Amino acid sequence: MKKPIRILTAIAFICALAFTARLSHANDTVEAPAVESIVPISPYQGSLKERQRLTGDWAGCRTWLEEHGITLAPRLTQFYQGLSAGDGDHDFEYGGKADLMLNADLSKLGFWKYFSLTVHTEYNYGESVTGAGGTLVPPNTALVFPGMEDADAFDLSSVYFTQHFSKSVSLLFGKINMMDIAASTPFKGGAGIDSFWNLVVI
Image (cartoon, rainbow, N blue to C red; front, side, top):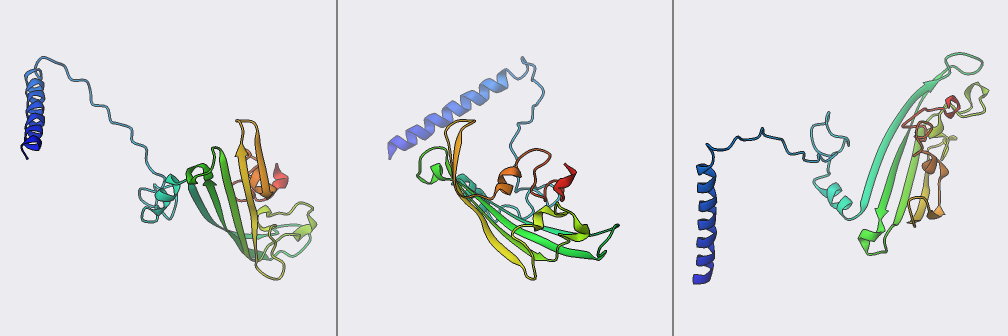
């Protein structure tokens, strides 16, 4: 019982010495201007206006998943679009896409390094103006797949594994939606959601 008391007494004594030394030199030194420490802000924190993700941290679940290599990116995109000029039906149509992208760093789940899994589910609903005006390129890229003919459409569009060997060499195998790969390219990417709706403008 005496040993812990001695350790605590020694710690208190050291802290007292340090505090006394700081006070004794306070008048002899010129303090540097305070510099605020830069603390990384989570994209899930802050008000609705400040946060990068609308639904926040899901009571800590989102951060826990990321720490274990799993990233979930749900998204809902809505469209109201129609033909403003030219031949054809000039009615405007409302439709949308709900999709979920899952990326898993499998090395954090017990597999080898640089091995990952990507899963993408897509659900289209409502109506689309695809084919309006007789265009060859669909006016709304996001609603082309998995389609919207006479009913809503759902598809597991991507389920593939990736093995990175270097910064420029990687191997992908599984079911791959090439729109997902092209979506990451600057300017012309976005899969009709984060960039231009109609790819013909590129």
